Image (tube, rainbow, N blue to C red; front, side, top):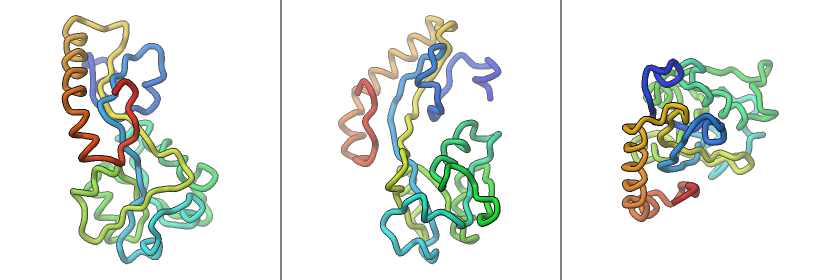
Length: 183
């Protein structure tokens, strides 16, 4: 919100299309994949991976559109036909990842999260990659090209140095991450 209202000069977050927009500078720091999460008691927990068709008719949890601009639409592309089946599915919304995990474990929902959450949420949860959808996303710093002040430029330069120093460590610790352009 602060970035979209120009209250800040730069921001960090998930790239939901800014990477390809000409008016924004985007420096990807890392990439990751979104995966399905289900309770280890959920019928889908018997699988090691899922197709989008297996999500048809499931109780799906989506991020609140206002809290996570762009992420809601990105996750909808994982569903059969790229939309919620209003007749066969029920869906819920969440505003934070902790609430999402509570609803997955306690409410029988299918949720979506990044693979880096595997080390934080382990009890009663199964992480399942989607086999037939593009689930990779980038996270990093972005700023408006028409507002590249010396301070913003210096921040981007420092982040490039950090990214280079951490590359080997990150790839060793998170082999499931996708390729990041320029790394």
